[in-house]
Amino acid sequence: PTLRLAQLPPGTSTAAIKALVPGLTVDAVKILPPPPGTAGGERRSMTAIVTLSQETAANDIDAAVHALQNKYLGFGFCLELHRHLSSAALESSTAVGAGAGRGSGSAAGAAAHPFGAKPVVVEGPGPNTQQFAPNQYRGIAPPTSYSSTPRGPIGPILHVPVRPPSDIKELRVIHKTIESLLTHGPAFEALLMSRPEVQREPRWAWLWDARSAGGVYYRYRLWEMMTSSTPSSGRYVPLFEDSAAWKAPESALPFEFVTRLDEFVEDTAYNSDDDDEGDSGDEAGRGKEEEAGPSYLNPLARAKLTHLLARLPTTTGKLRKGDVARVTAFAITHAGSGADEVVEALVANVLHPYSFTSANPSYHPSSAGGQETGDKEKEDTTPATLNALHLISSLLSSCSTSRIRHAWRYRSLIESALRRSKTFEHLASLERRMGWGRMRGEKWRRSVGAVLALWEGWCVFPAKAQEGFVEAFKVPVREEKEVEEKKGGRWKAVEKVASAETAGGEEDVDGEPMVEDEDEDEDLDGVPMEPSDEEEGDVDGEPMAVDEEETYEPPPAEPVVVEQPQAQEREVEKPVRKRPKAEDMFADSGSEGE
Image 1 (cartoon, helix red, strand yellow):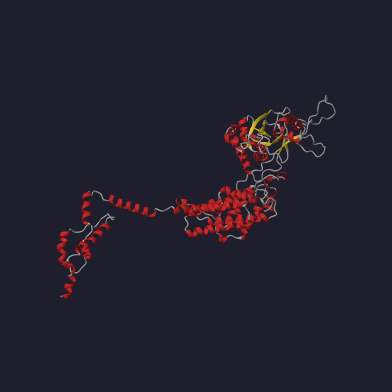
Image 2 (cartoon, one colour):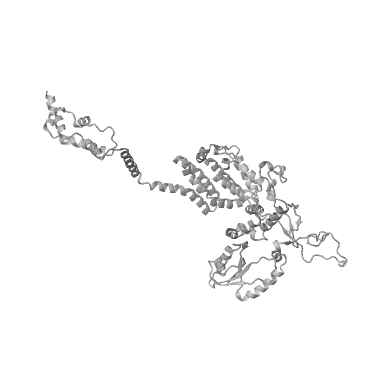
């Protein structure tokens, strides 16, 4: 079994080719030379034939082909991989393939022309048929030596269609690159292309591939900015000499130079009659030919979505059905043009509610510099977060019953966005970060758990994804319980604190010698035994403990607290020694007889 790997970057080694299929056993790698009929304008690339081991299963080969198809290899090259014929028929298949490539017409010819030029589609012959051919019509009469028979173009009339990229992130990167290039000069582009991340990351593929939609748009916009030209929509413009003409985009980007909300009304793309539905059909200036690719929200639609999310109430009790319905209707109507951005905004509203940002006119954060950080930490945004979860629930419920095209995409988009942003891990950590008590934490877990149970009942996500969300919400709670169970040395910590306080009290004594401390310890043992024997006659039926309490006077300021129990033990032991005396035993009876 063999595999054919095409569109490899020039200079790719045999070891690198083997590394592309690590799960398969490779016996040999053969680098194919470029076909002899390759046009000069075609981009240089490599093609290799990989011979696999005879024991390789067909299922493994199909899985590898499916996994590696269109893999980005860097420098603007995407791998083209498919199963190939055996080595015995390799030479014949190469010859047949080369002949078929030369006769394939526009498909093979489009890749060979600079910037991916395509033939101009002309419905019928007319006087304007040759107006796009370079150097054919200049308004000057031909010389008399020419024959009277008019000469038409030798080949098909070519043009380079210019279309903005369908990915908003790629469009932003292109515009930023053009701005930096105009500021720093051509050296900026050379420095950018020398960076390893620019050479390997897929988001920079347009910089290397001049035939891609992003590469064509990048060069057209750069020419437009440098020459200050504003060609009308659909017009053919000669950017390079002796080359195919470039066709300007059918419509410009709407609200491209708007930076403030009040400037939307003054823009030419603004239409007050279709405020609600006008931007859903031709979002971002798209034509019918680009409906298959993903689109994005124009600045006006993005501002509307931000306004709808920012005006939501900050408490669950004030949330109305109309607030939820407006956001859901906006998301459903923009399912085919900007679903990724809608989901991104909804998930971001859960993590950081828009109602607590400057987008909400009624939100006024504290202006004090010292108290601002403390107020932000104590600011409770959990009711607004719960409202944001209800918005996602409403959208998940509506996308299954809506008849709008591409509305079903929201389920997979929301699932990947929640997993990527770790939303439920963030919700589980709010209890600890806000410093709630047990009752408040239980209430919060019940509220979020009710939303998860609702999603499970609707079966909006696969079972594995649903279990992942539930476990992600429970993990921080389990970790806190484990920490509480491991706290077994609580009383040991108190003893350490007491000993630390005792040591601190001893350190407060400044200048007292250690001998005085020993004398004070002797005073704690009570009066010596000889004086106590002389005082026994004065005792008339009173317990010895009272006598000792009257005679014992502790020091006025004694810092040692730990030794007090020892003194009390000695006070209890001393009366035990004196009770066996006879006069003490019959003292009460003598007093009663008198």
